Length: 320
Image (cartoon, rainbow, N blue to C red; front, top):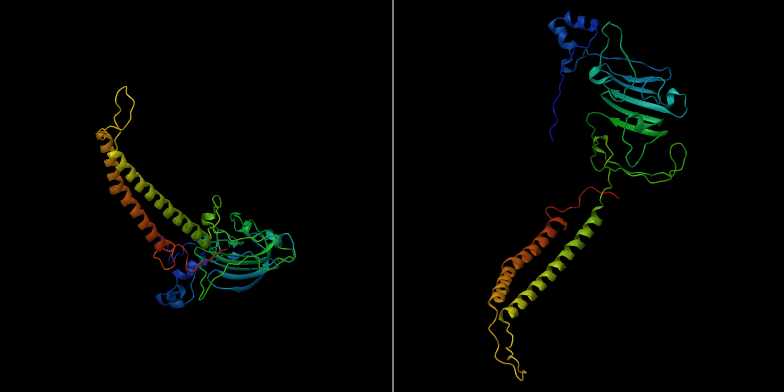
């Protein structure tokens, strides 16, 4: 599926007055360097971070990028476990693009704009905290795993998130007996894959080998049923042959029968029905049964055998 392209190559509408005047008063040569071409510095709107006293801005670029080290803080200085004064809630916040598409350096009155962390509007983030409510902070669905509260957490958020490995990727749960607070991990929690942040129809994954075994049993049962139907069809044709030629002896009226008399002619109506039914079974039923058997064999080869064109088991991905 193609993504809709949304591009704002050079939006200067949110620059402050001082920055705009610098661009307007520059000559063409200076403008090349101001506008960031060829990797030169770029004038663009950058908000001012509303820093807490406990925070250290470990790194800050000139294009709205920061690494902030402090305590758990999902929004204002009063938010999170850092805001209420907890210990053991150190955090590292790596942000690119504070305020996202609403970024600006000054408001309409020319006053500097200050911003807090905003887990919805900020463009891209890796958030790490020793103690936080990671699901609540990022407004995530509860799912089957549930909401992590007062736990260490890491969240990665952007328009597109890709985890790329040169060899393999593992998603593994419950590797330790104790959590980061020293509490016992009492249950094995799984892995939720939730599209659209909607867990209203969350269902368990199917285990491929078990499904394969079940389907093979079903295919074998269908073959046996086809064989039984084939046997019944053959028996029915034989019965129709007997009925088509069947006659009854004629009994003499009023006299006891000492020996059977010559039989009556076979029933024309019964003969027509029996022959027609037999022909239908030969032409339609037998062909259908043969076709069904062939289809079940080829289907099994395609779907249920390793190496088949449509083998239902993934070659690369596994789950328990």
